[in-house]
Length: 65
Image 1 (cartoon, rainbow, N blue to C red):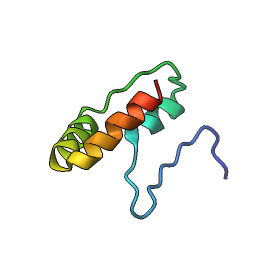
Image 2: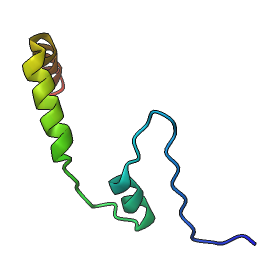
Image 3: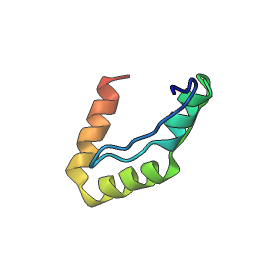
């Protein structure tokens, strides 16, 4: 028997499951704005650890604005 409106979430190997994105799609939350603070902190630490990455990130940001 096929069930309609059933949401199945399967994370592939090596990829993280994005719960917020899944919930947004499931409940049609198109105007939902989510800020991933943990991701922001990881990027900040990466830029501190690798100065060249920080410089390239800044150049990329300047070229896109």
